[in-house]
Amino acid sequence: MFFVYTVVIQWEKEVAVATKGEATRQKILEVAERTFARQGYAGARLDDISGALGLTRQSLLFYFKDKGGLYQAVLENLFDKHQSALTQRARNEFASLEGYIDYQIENTLESYLIHPEFPMMMLRFIQGEGPRAEEVHPAAMIAVNIWDQILQEGGASGQTRKVPLENLVAVVGGTLSYYLLMPQAAQAGHTLMKYDPRAPANVRKIRRNLQLAVRGMLGLTVEVVNQEMSLEK
Image (cartoon, rainbow, N blue to C red; front, side, top):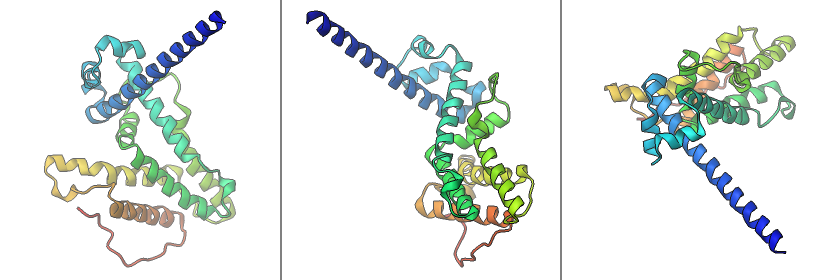
């Protein structure tokens, strides 16, 4: 009986240590994500990341072997969350292709809003910042694959125009990146960009503008609504 009790106590300790270790790892990823997004790979310092968490540099390196490893872990973590958001519902759950398109527009916007550093990290990823992984994370192409499937179905059935995939992806990603990243230009004194992209009224307008761009490009019906489309400062 004493042996069993000892084993249980030891198991509980190991679980507690593992849980604490994973929580610390996630906190490191959160701080590193903000640091890499705002300062870039070259500008980010491990000492700053560890210091913001009250850790030593050595403690941080216990979880990630080096700066490059941490950067790759941040990207993988972001890609995993983005993939999870975009694949919550499958195409066969929607009665129409248009319904699925509107869902993906909404879902993509929500994913960008929930993870505020994602647009900048994606921009840095596309520009080739930081060390490159031997294999591209599957989730890095999830949005491209989804829009490709939409174009394939829409083109084959005649429901949408046949437009180049790269053009559609550029419209979706470019529109969202513009609206979510441009407020940072206010730091340089551009008063035009002083708005909160996450304010409810602005989220509605960003969603509407993205719908107009995507549905218009695909040749789908666009409901004309007489409302102010500029974002509120």
